[in-house]
Image (cartoon, rainbow, N blue to C red):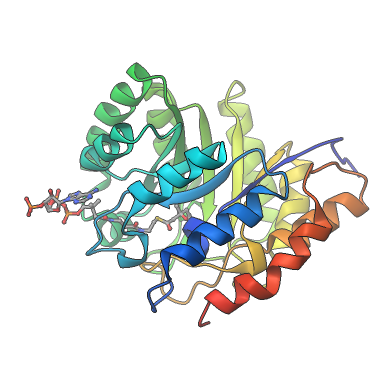
Length: 285
Ligand code: HMG
Ligand code: MG
């Protein structure tokens, strides 16, 4: 079996892990989680989201989180769904931003209140501005395997959105199994085809673990040449507009599996394990 020597794990717990929590989480707890995760050695952590607080209340105060990450000297990612979000991110010096588009029309409208066509127009302007400012840009495609509203999502639809975002200039493409319905076969085939179409692009895999197949999906993605994975401490997470979906793949499971297979993650597993009870304590799920 093919096992790369090293992979990058991007911890997304402080953003994807917490965004769906119904009870407000104190700022001090968010900061403690970020600090303890940073101590584990992640090269990057997704910590904030400059969304409208009315849409995702848990992500309010992204500016304060950004200042804190800077104090820690952390390389962090923040979600910026529209130009207003990007302007907020620029004003506090965010180093890496993420734009996101749903591969299904219904999900995209529910999630960002726009058609896919309008989102692409906005992303184009947004990516242009971010590039001008020297900001690293991640492009997410959500529901890139299937959608809770529309069912199967075609490869053509996913390819079309990737092609647009790559053409606008994103630095990496992150394929989201937002509702956690992918399986190893579709994961392997989709990533193989995407890498054939876009050989120069770096792809990231972002699995939710609804059907407990996320680890198997990682193995399939590795076989297709993917070496970057998002995950969330204690498997926290979910998207408020993805009904029935559970958390992201748990970081501790992913790190343990990869390290046992001889694949370096550069994450300190012992420190990571010590954070689990604290992280679980923040969640009401
Ligand atoms: P909208 O209501 O359509 O915004 O929201 P609008 O452009 O019509 O503006 C309405 C008002 O909101 C205006 O204020 C704007 O200034 C303000 P007014 O003039 O009425 O006083 N506004 C903002 N305020 C603060 N920050 C902003 C902002 N934008 C507008 N950024 C919007 C559009 C995109 C903002 C909204 O739909 C939104 O915030 N959606 C976010 C949804 C979200 O965060 N979903 C979860 C993340 S995606 C995910 O989890 C999937 C992922 O994990 C990958 C995977 O799993 O596949 C990434
Ligand atoms: Mg997600």
